[in-house]
Image 1 (cartoon, rainbow, N blue to C red):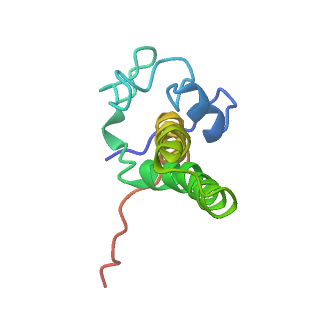
Image 2 (cartoon, rainbow, N blue to C red):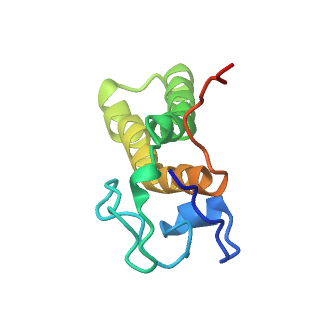
Amino acid sequence: MSKPDLPTHGMTPFQIGMRGVCPRCGVGNLFKGYLDLAPRCSACGLDFSFADAADGPAFFAQWAGCIPAVIFALWLEVSVGPPWWVHLFTTVPLLIVPPLLLLRPIKAWLIASQYMYKAQEGRLDQP
């Protein structure tokens, strides 16, 4: 398997993640749906079959989005002691919306990092 070329567009993996563009050309779309990868770049033809973000985006999105929401829920419960329906309208949206907003850019960031740093499965050296 040949390794991909390094990009010439000058964007960092984070910038690519925020834009959701091809890590090689920085122009074509990386996604065909909300989280579904396109089979290849519409601009440069890069095959995205190398990309495997696995559970990384979900972990980072939950970590960044849900921990503050749980801290808020605990603070609200201890300081105010509201009825359950207050949590339903304050805490539940905080547990759902931020991770959903973070999933796509984090997935694109991880895929761009895989491409730029030529990540691949680990292999054992053969003696």
